[in-house]
Image 1 (cartoon, rainbow, N blue to C red):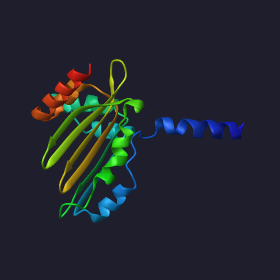
Image 2: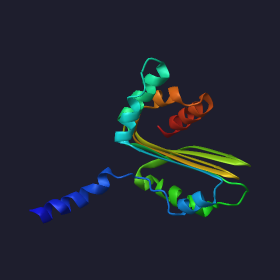
Image 3: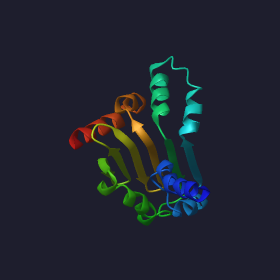
Image 4: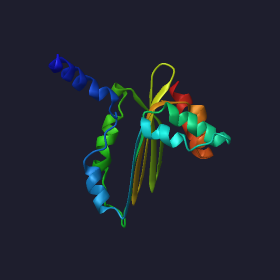
Length: 175
């Protein structure tokens, strides 16, 4: 009996695990960066954080509701002294996970000479189930992964207006 329970646990363990994995190269980037930020908030931590929001303002109410539905928020951000301290090869393992075969769609891709912003969403028939944002600049790299159902209207209340408009425009093209 114990052997079967252990096997069942090991099979179900990945179901609750974070879907997007940050590559091992990110640890090396953190060591090279002049500033590195790591945020790993699972569902329990998000609910705890939500308890500190009063919900009195529109923004706080939207954040509290949004956070309550999520499985996790994971951020890796690196700022470097000089250009070239990270390469496309460092970001490629993250992009490789954001494929249509895995349910992901790119909804925003803004490329400028000094900056690239990409937004990917994972959807089922009617809901957004996750979002990943990649921002790469010459001396800075940021990856934000939001795991769980996302109400885009509530998220829009929290995003800067320019990014909110870009996400809505990208989502409209994917419908």
